[in-house]
Image (cartoon, rainbow, N blue to C red; front, side, top):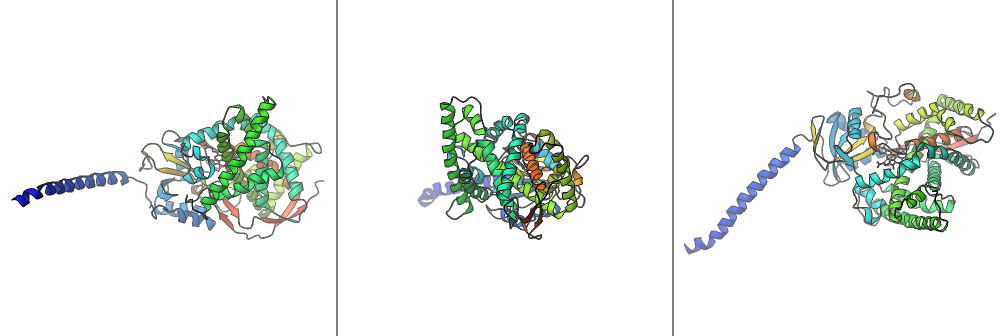
Length: 480
Ligand code: HEM
């Protein structure tokens, strides 16, 4: 009896433990079945990595759309689940999926950037800010800089810079690499318009670390020596150091000269009372958003113009007409850009087949239903150009390069969305259009060209990249 009495407390504990474990199990089971019941079909893949490797491999093989089409065929054409960059994710597909995410901003979803992007690019003091907060701030400063009045002033600057760039880096050579040179051009233009930096050595100080930082943006955020992410973090630190010095210099100039009119984007942010750290974060964001995207678009336009001589001929005629309507040496202006309609159709068709941006992420701010499935609060969502761009339901004979698809009414709504849509649509779309069109105008009225390797392979890392940088042989043309 004594023994039983003395063991009683242990038995009681065991019973309590057993019952509690049972209750916890039942609650967990109930919650997990309730949570999984309507989840979109698909699979999570490996722990932590999820299906990131499948996505990366499809991209490296030059077929990023395959990651999407394999799953839309197997699971659902509307939405499927996966796990990318360590996150549960719902991929929204088709015109309806795009429309839903674009118009669901702040109702169902909010902005979200992968941690790799925030950690590599932002000052450590801002990394914990929400993506929504950062995105709102990023947009807040762009509209004045990108309003139609300002854009009209950039056209002659873009025109002169395109001419200088072609004279300096193309004309002296028989053969050039289009991709690195387009990057050089768009980067130099951004340095000039965002921060009035024109000196080539100073531009290089930013350009080198930027290349390293962008390479690590969409990577698994493991910060160990030798990883892509680690190089990106170091490069991000270097960029912020250079930017801090430049912004402080510009701040002192404003004070010393009692300047009241902003010469560039950095000036206007300083005059608005933003701190050096805040401005640094924003400027890095603008560079990332504007630089690789626009240079990719230019590169693939050049590539398709080479492959389709009839298209090239029509583009050249459009630009020769513009040239003939102007005085010798007169810079391009707004009205000239409006005449470049066919060239913009060519640019759109190039962006359909080789999209400069894959899509964008969101985060669910509440549980919501889409196409009969539940997307739980906290899950990440992704809209992607790859579910529509080469979809034969929207673009018959989808692999064919055919700029006439964009003439007349053009593609159906929400099927061609290289810049996104809705309230978060790319605010730099018009800037990009001007930058691309002024460059192509100068290029086609100066050179003809042939590809060095007509079978050059294209990889997506994560945007399309010609593996040899698109080398071409150039021949100056006479414009009389
Ligand atoms: C061909 C060139 C470009 C393409 C294809 C492109 C595409 C995109 C896409 C797909 C997004 C994401 C939209 C979303 O979240 O749904 C975006 C965002 C953004 N883009 Fe662009 N872009 C280009 C050029 C530019 C340029 C030249 C600038 C600036 C001068 C710029 C500034 C931005 C900014 C600041 C955002 C973030 C907006 C936010 O977080 O709400 N982009 N862009």
